[in-house]
Length: 524
Ligand code: NDP
Image 1: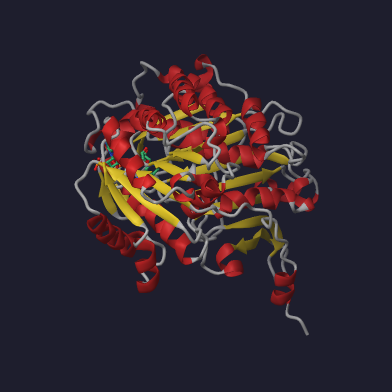
Image 2: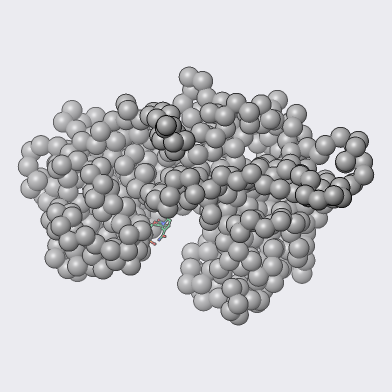
């Protein structure tokens, strides 16, 4: 007899059979001595190599100003792999093969001669694809993005139409700090490269759980039928962090929660949750349409629709946490928000009248990212009439991290001779279903960039649409000092006005439930 697990295996529907294979190429990482390269990029490339997903022939070149040789950079990377890779180890044989393809080019982005040196190094790989198929990864400060691409173009390393191969640029976040700067960066980049050569990364889109949102919605007829104002009361998206800003105070002073999380990750998740089913349209068209259907919040309505907050001293994970204003590199009287909560409306037929509540913050009780679809309550008859608000409405929670999975919450009878009702759950866990292995987001995204598939990267108009939503909120906050009510104690769920934002519509935040206990409205 065939086991049910075996049957599931037989039912696998393979959709990427037409995925383009990665051609032989060279990958140039600008920012070779930086944090992102050591913690994410090299571990991702090494795992892709181990799994045989990189082409037979490839090279990796690191570019930065620090003094290093090929050998010393390789030694540093080997150490980084033992600390940061998901396997936390290096396999001798595969490392020997991988590291033999790794080179270091000392250079300065401000200096045209460094790009000539880079070009000579690449040319040394021969006249074939290793010197024509080039992926440039900009793991550098955003202020250097445009200059780096300009230098690459002037050195002849990026061509708009190269008959001998392809050149692509992966651009890290943040992409601009407002609409004007994002437009300007887009203009500068597209002076030197076609839009299809530019891959703006948002690593959230590389996460398995985020990709699964579309699979879940559009391969399960039962849920898609419920996915509208007819059945859904409201949606909550929470991305919480149980850490303060720590050593990143300097960066955070320029960013704040709205720019750091809402403009990119949270609006991306919202667009996948709310976009229309795909037909012939590429996914990115549908995401842009959704972002453009979100009703903008004009500056004079910001105080009614958006709450900002900043953490005060408190306790996080059992340890004392200083106030944001006392963190290193933070201005003593800083008004930068470490918390933001928004109420958004989508003006289309599907979502008319359904609020989307988005919140993110640092210094909160736990680190968790999840989407909660809160269904409408049952009619006020039978059980609902007798239980009142205690009979909770159904909900579906998509847990993006940790304990990745999906939970459907409903009500059930407590076994026994008496009649008692309480919430029960149906639960899909990635770990239980597929085992612990999930590739890092950067593995998937690097592979897609190498294969020329931009689906999981942000298009120019997507980035600009997101800034158009966020900019007026910042304008509404400008010149306004934080009020007493906008502070929250580190280790609590944000400032009081965030509760009031939902309470006005009869709603309440739900605490993320990574440990799967009975969920209760968020206490402060
Ligand atoms: P780091 O400050 O750790 O690294 C910056 C890198 O840029 C260093 O390798 C530095 O090397 C190099 N660099 C600086 N100036 C020059 C120059 N003039 N010429 C050549 N190289 C230069 O930054 P991160 O790695 O943390 O971040 C890199 C990018 O990735 C940023 O845009 C960031 O926003 C983004 N990002 C980072 C994440 C992370 O977890 N670290 C997460 C998400 C995005 P050297 O001094 O040797 O020249």
